[in-house]
Image 1 (cartoon, rainbow, N blue to C red):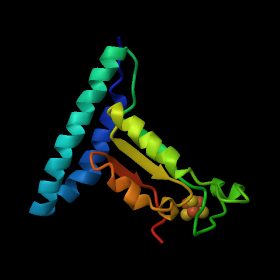
Image 2 (image 1 turned 180 degrees about the vertical axis):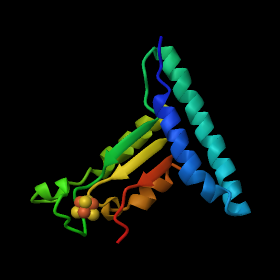
Image 3 (image 1 turned 90 degrees about the horizontal axis):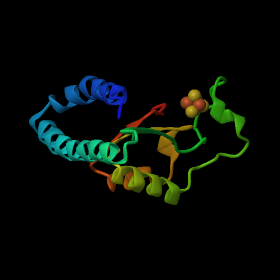
Amino acid sequence: MHISSDRFKYNLRIFRKAFLPWALSSPQHLWMAWNFYRKVRKKYKLNVRLQHKLDYPIPHSFVLSLTTDCNLACDHCYARAYNEPKVLPKKVLEGILEQAGALGCFFFVLTGGEPMLYPGLLDTLSNHRDCLFILITNGF
Ligand code: SF4
């Protein structure tokens, strides 16, 4: 059986460059980071255990496009190809996060359109405190 660790190494690089500097910036952040690390480590171990058991590669990470809606209108953007905004139904998003979590997936890149326009996004994500979410946002 061969299970590629490339994805995990990539995620680890993001963790070191983006998350670690934040964690080391205050004692409170460090405590939050330590608790988060313990939860993610548990999920990672579950993921590896399932990969071995099923003899099948299971990703640690997902990219989810939540909506084509955006508050900007950049010329090059593929999201503008839609006449009406398309939004991933909330039940589908919750189902994906639940199922992915049960497989030990813990790293999600959320994109769009503009993911911050997704209705109730922060409430939904707060139900998955053992996952890491990165938003590709325009920041406006
Ligand atoms: S999703 Fe990004 S690229 Fe597309 S219009 Fe919005 S800000 Fe521009």
